[in-house]
Amino acid sequence: MTRAHVTYFAGAAEAAGTRTETVDVPQSIDAAELRACLAVGKSVHFADLVGVCALIIDGQTISEAERCQLGDNIQIEVLPPFAGG
Image (cartoon, rainbow, N blue to C red; front, side, top):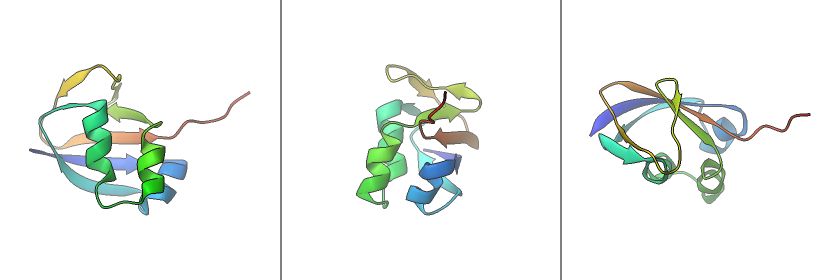
């Protein structure tokens, strides 16, 4: 396991009930597994929302099919979809 510092933005922060938190995640993880780790102990609404959020790990967006190798004290940003024009 590795320690991750998570920042939630906009509606994701509201659904998570916090703007930031620290969580332990496996050192090898894909997007679906990361979403599941972030949803532990949170509402069904959050679990649904995080399923459509962009996940950024140390400045790089993680794609759905990608498996990441994580180091210690990583930064994760969770961004909900934004409407634009």
